[in-house]
Amino acid sequence: MVVFASEQLWPNILGLVHWHKHEGGVKDLCIYYTNDPVRSKQPAERLAAFASKVFPTIRVHRPESPGGTLPQDVLQQITAWQKELPNRRWIINATGGLKLMFYGAVQAKELPNTEVVYGELSGEWFRWKKTTDGEQFESLTIDRSETDYIPVCYLVQAQSGMAFGRAWECAKPEKLPIVELVRSGIEQDWDWPQMFACIGRPSETQAGFLFEKFVAAVLLELGIQHVDLNAKLGEGNGQSVQEIDVIANYRGRILIFDCKLRVKSEEGRRVEPLAVQIRQAAAIRRDIGGIGAKLLMIRPGRPFREQEKLLARELGVDILDRSATLNFFREVSRFCGVPGELPESLQRAQELLDSAKSQGYQEAFAKSAFLGGSSGGEPRSVVIRLENHLNKYMEETGQDWAIYHMGKRYFIYYNIPPKLHNNACIKQLQQILNPVAEIQGIWVSKNGNKGLAQLALKVDNRKLKQFLSQYGGKTLLE
Image 1 (cartoon, helix red, strand yellow):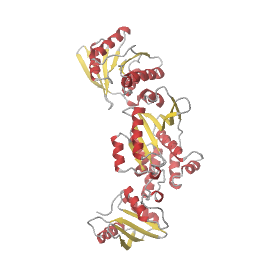
Image 2: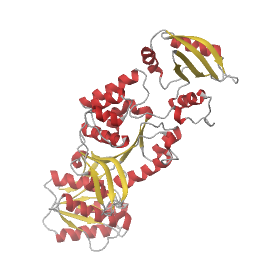
Image 3: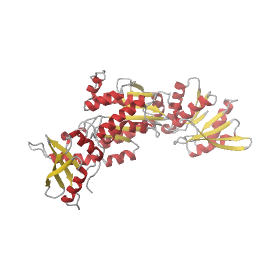
């Protein structure tokens, strides 16, 4: 087999695994590289090391000096290898390299016992070869999951210039009773040490690390074979140059999970602002796993603003913020690309979250700093301006209303649209809330953009939450 070393080694790795497994095995791997140190020469070294580690019986061949980038340079080297290694069937993997190099590789189909293959990043593969009837071109089906048995660290060290030659230290995840943890989390208000104690696994570990163990255990439940936890790339002197919370190998991709139980009030003081975290995540994704890798930022205690979501999309970073936590297991499965329905255990866990949502819960896995994290813009006082917190809540949830209670009294606070009179607002709100409450005692702000009214409940607190859950994240006034 002949391959071209480039920045993206996944097609070379997948092709090597496939042909070694399915079509008679691979005895010799010939790696063509150019004098570009970053895009070709160093990847050739990493691919050679990977092949020797995973397939020790395969003999790896590299030219003593870099090859050229012209078609004739490529064809000349392939011809030289075939003379050096006679009586073989040849697979020329033309994926990678420059366009002129690709043209030289395609010309090699004219050589005896030789066919040329090419893989797109989308997963499609094609084959050219000469037959007695002329040239034959056809598509190939190569299952991306063929690489699922390979340890994550081997794939990272092949793909990443940073990881190559460095020690990889990690913990292996353990299976956890996901359903019991979720049930306990709902009951314990997501106190992670208390949750682990409830399932008989008390731990002094910080909540954030327990959450990472939970995420890794979810991946195992999804059927993902190779998952590493708290992975570190070390220099051998106790110092690490890169740390990854959870990382997995699944269906021809590196999946990276950046898990943080952080709230907005911590950013800029204890940790970097969210926009900086997104850019850092994008750089890690590209270096650790290449262009085909995926990275999911999980922030249960943090809502992403629209500009932050846009930045993440532009940089190829997936996000799972507070607004998506009640759909957690479906979202993680979708991100990983797991086909079919959720496994039975995760389906039951998801149903617990669905039930919590129907009862009025708006977040899971973390307790966001609501009253303690208001951006009201004034110093703390003996008189609390509650509307600052309510306005923040409405902004983050995308609602134009908020209902709160003090003791046994319930109130609805709402935005009055510019072209709508408060009487019309009250009429609309009463129509919506009629099954559960009567509106009483109305107050309107001086500039006429905010309203407040007391509610006389017709139902208990639990039924009120269940009723309001259908309107979560929605506006009530047009």
